[in-house]
Image 1 (spheres, rainbow, N blue to C red):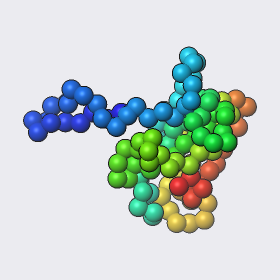
Image 2: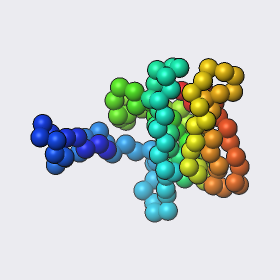
Image 3: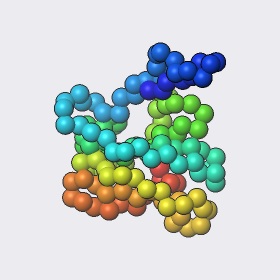
Image 4: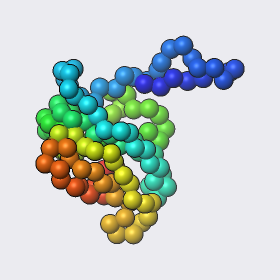
Length: 128
């Protein structure tokens, strides 16, 4: 969700754009990773990365996942959620982006799966 400001630079009393359901379950014990945002000037996109611990809302991924949300022009909504989703067993740790470069293997996203403790490297090209 987002909370905007009025013309006097005071917070609006209502929220907009959300909530955005990233999981299909409201069962307690579900969690998300810290959010990571990264503007990739090479492709002209602003990404928001988040890991979900279980019951990812997607086709084909029933467990944990990492999602890449394109927030370049607006907050994603359920109607325009065209995010890339990769399976991540148990969700993810914090998510790190290495750099902003056109070089081979550059602009990669790193995280650890929380079940199995597996270090994963995914290129932004695969996540956009």
